[in-house]
Amino acid sequence: MAKNERKKVFVAMSGGVDSSVAALLLSKNPEYDMVGIYMKGWSLTDCAEQDATDARRAAGALNVPFYVFDFEEEYKKRVVDYMISGYATGDTPNPDVMCNKEIKFGLFLKKALALGADYIATGHYTRLCREILNSKSQIPNKSKIKKFKHLNIENSLKIVNCKLKIAKDLNKDQSYFLWTLTQEQLKHCLFPIGDYIKPQVRALAKKYQLPTAEKPDSQGVCFVGEIDVAGFLKEKLGKNPGPIKTMDGRIIGTHDGVIFYTIGQRKGIGIKGSLPGEQGKIYFVAAKDIDSNTLWVAEGESEKLFSKELVVKNINWIYGTAPKFPLKCLARIRYRQPLQSCLIKINGNLSYPNDRFYSINVVFDNPQRAITPGQSAVFYDKSGAMLGGGVIV
Image (cartoon, rainbow, N blue to C red):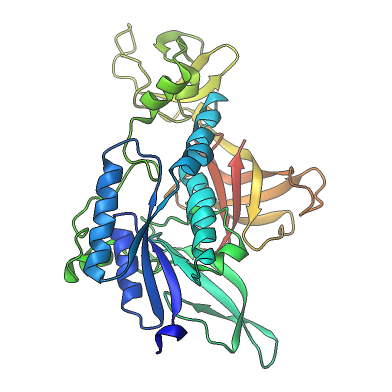
C-alpha cells in the first residue's frame, strides 16, 4: 500500500507495556502510518520523567516517530482541580474518568486530528465494534457487527454506530473509565489490545524485545503516578479533625477531616483498636456527615454498608440519545466489579437532549456494598456493550 494511502494514527504511548504493545500491533499493520505521542500531565513525581523516557525508548525500538504533547497546565485545571474540588464537597471523584474525557479523548484527539491524524490509539483494555452500512443498499445490517482490532474501514462501508464493549481480559477491562466518550470521538479511536489478555500482551512485548516488557503496571492516578492522594489532599485542603463514631453513636477515634475518606474505606481510618471491647474489630467508613464533621463507621459486612438504590447525574449515553425508560440492564459502580443486574428509572420529566440536568434512579436486584458519591456508575447491555454512565450522587 502506498504511504499516502495509509491511515495516520497517533498512538498515546504512556511508557507502559500496554500502550507499547498497542503501538507494536499497529506498527505491524501496513495500512497504518503511525506516530508515537507521549502526553505530559502534571509532573508531581520522578515517575513522569521515567515514563517519558520509557515511551521514547519503546517508540525507538519500533522505529516510529515520537513526539511529546505538553498538557500539563490543562491537566492541572481540568483534572487535578476537579479532583480537589470534588473532595472538598465530600465526594470521591474519579480523576481517571476526567483524564480520559478532558485530556486523552479531548485535547489529545483534537490536536491529533488537527495535525492530520485519522485515528488515535491507546492501550486501554476495551473493544470497539462498528455497526456498518453497505453503501450500495443503504440498509443497516444490524446482525452484522464487525470488530476492528486495528483494521481500516473499506470505502464501501459507512459506520452507523460504534459500540464500546468489555475487553476480553475481564480482570483488566477498562471500559468503566470510558463512559464519557461520544460517537464522534469513538469513530476516530482504535483500541488494539482489547482482544488480548494481559499475559499475551506481556508475551508480545518480550517477543519483540520492547524495553517496557518487564515494567510493572501503574497503580496511580492517570498521568500522575503513585502519589499519596490523602497526603496531597490534606496539604491542599487542610486538616479538620473530628470524631469517628460507630453507628450506635460511640466515639472510637479521631479523623483528619471527613472529606479525606471514602465510603467503604478500611485502611488509614485512624482507629487503633485499643479501646476496651474494640480489639480485633475491623471497621469501614459507612457515612460522612459534612455538617457535623463526623465520620461514621460500621463493622465488616454491616447492613449499613449496603444499599440497593442510587441516583446518577451528569449522564452520557454512548449512542447520543437516552434509551427508553424504565430500562433493565447491567451496571457496575467500581472498576473490575462484576456486572450487576439493575433497573433504571428517570427522575422527573425528560426532554433529552435538551434537559442536561436530569438524573436517573438505579435499583439493583441485589444490595451493593459501599456506594460512593462522586464515583461512576456505568451501564451495559447483556452482550457487554456499554450503554452509558454517569456520576453517583
